[in-house]
Length: 204
Image (cartoon, rainbow, N blue to C red; front, side):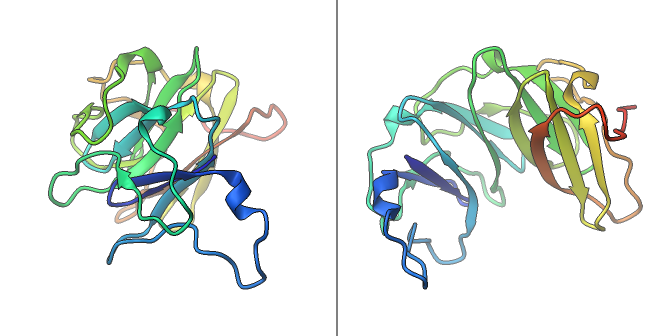
């Protein structure tokens, strides 16, 4: 399946077969509500569990089977109920033995055992993921052997070994993973394969 999630918390999944014959001009993959935009897309098995994170520090874990299969032009259904001013910033596909990496716009990062996120029904408010001061920039489900790449608004990029970041509870504030200049903030969090050949940053 191809799953898609919007900034306003609307999610849908569509069989990959619906995209077999893509025209040069493209195809409509999801019908967006006014003012909404796509936040994430990914390939799922039909039996995955997803963790959806928001800017204001909430998160919800639910089974993909809670989502009925929809056509390409459908709008989708609610994944998480957002409070006023909140928006979706990241999605992770749950894997056994993995940890959940949360990075804030201010450059703090924290890994948490995936088991700390209990499974709920989609469409609720979720649970508190990050309660310290600041906004969440992104969330990734990662393995100890991964690297992460962080990019700031000012175009600064760093790479870091995941194993260097401490594992804490959902109530932990994390460690400094990126030092930022005045007015700068983290805007992109990406997971990539581990590399010993490239110089990497260390958390503080």
